[in-house]
Length: 250
Image 1 (cartoon, helix red, strand yellow):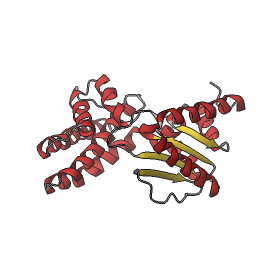
Image 2 (tube, one colour; image 1 turned 90 degrees about the vertical axis):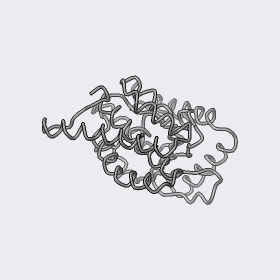
Image 3 (tube, helix red, strand yellow; image 1 turned 135 degrees about the vertical axis):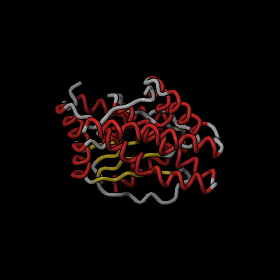
């Protein structure tokens, strides 16, 4: 597919709008319509519906995720939880070149609702440079969140601990997948993806953090699993003096 071709890109826009309509019940579609109208009002250059909604994999913990290129719209106080990521065009491209996986995800897997050409330019750049997100960014994010996650689990606040552990398990899964040349999809798809890598413990822990209500001792086990996986990577990196790839098979 030649993403630089105007006809090809116009077809992508048509397909994505149809996909967004299919994947949203009326109440979510109404919120998306409001976000789109307000994004256009502030002169945004592109709007992408992203995350689990774009993949038709919403769960009980899903937000509505949007990526706006350009001005930040005022969206008021909708009933749904919304994550609104905003970048100006220059920052968007800089993040893409530096291997930001969120930007790559938006370009290739998001539902593009409108685009003045900035996302098309990003897709053309990635296609021409064989671009790939930087796995080490997700590893660093997981490692940096470990201490705080342990504190939350130790506090005994199970709701907050579950949210934090779910986040750190997701970061770890995304790191392992990128490191093994597998693009991470929506959160609900990650457990199946890491299972295909043979990471059985991580797959099970992540799936339960999304679809169940684990007790604190199980959440603490999840934290120890992340610590084990990321420490293995650090040890290998020290020995090799290079970024390392690892799996739970070690």
